[in-house]
Figure 1 (tube, rainbow, N blue to C red):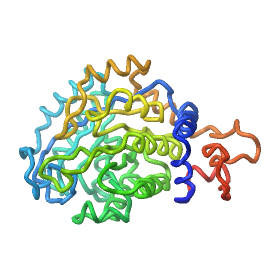
Figure 2: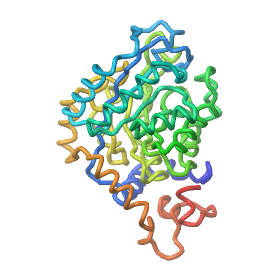
Figure 3: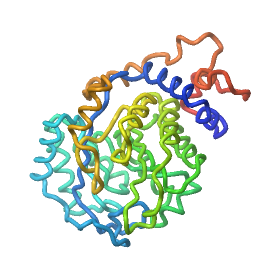
Figure 4: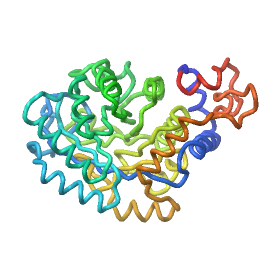
Length: 357
């Protein structure tokens, strides 16, 4: 896949783009299912990194009050509450640059084992991890590891200088080799261009296999951070990225993540229509606001959508792996011709290769 190809998809008339994305969504996903996750900050603030968007950086004067690593019983209490509230995946985030082999990491492993016993999918986002740590997390029961690319390689240095783009890719490679699923996405509205967003999607779509989850965040501009004056991302540009992500990564859970408190119901509905099928449930995402559970429930009910059980998600992905994804297309028709509606004039890859290339 090339930048030209993904750009042509993104630039389709919006109605056509959403239609194509919904076609892919209907083929690979439960059309009415939405994965409900809960994200808990288990160690807050005092991070040594300089991520320009993050209120948890020790370099910025923000509202965040530092908190030490929570103990396992308290985290398990929150995990039980998340499950009772309808979440099927419990994500634990710690504001660290990287994980060190200390008692804190052993406590994390103990906590992962405890959450797994609750019959929840377990996700961690702890910063950079090496290959041995990834294996230990997998053995403890961690299903998914989140490590976002945030933006394109070219724009990355304008947002973060304390960790390289290749550092992030190395962590994701360690995660994949350990047998955990990859969760990785980015943030829209940091001053980047459209091509930066598309290049980030290209990087993710080049992974084999594709990420299990692709969180698409809208920047929440926090006072005290370098990006405090950024305007909220254009709603139609955001929907286009959701739709493009769905088309180029058909089996991934496309997560409508941060920034939903700034989105009205109609914008969120468009995102679901464009292929988003996962959200964070709960009134807080690490340190920033998130819609009330009752509001999310009401919106899902109004849209005729339902919570997706993790077993259903696994079954959908397993079926997709065993099927010819485009068996119903005419002989010789390619995936990109299908996705672009035949409106492009460049040479396409073969159908079976286009999704992965």
